[in-house]
Length: 109
Image 1 (cartoon, rainbow, N blue to C red):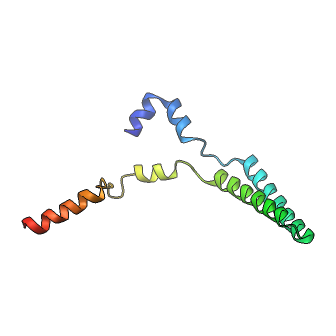
Image 2: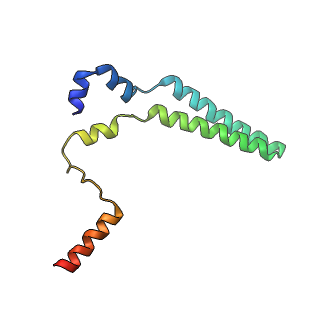
Image 3: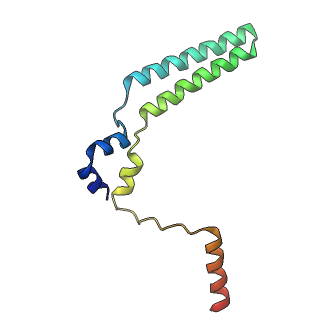
């Protein structure tokens, strides 16, 4: 189905999958934010101001999330499922349906 969609509308597939290349600008910005956050944390520790420490933590956290999102490949999970080397996932039944099936198996067998 994915191959048919890719053949039918390649622009939609490229827009939905996103860029799989590592963005160097985001990595550099993330590293800079992590360093700035650590410096801000130390500044808050020296000045003994808790809000500055909190701001430094949030800056460093933002930088690390930016690095993680730049490095992670968005289509990796879809490609692994699409290989077909593993068993196809079963459709999950609702909890109530599973209970009903168990009840029927116990009482009617």
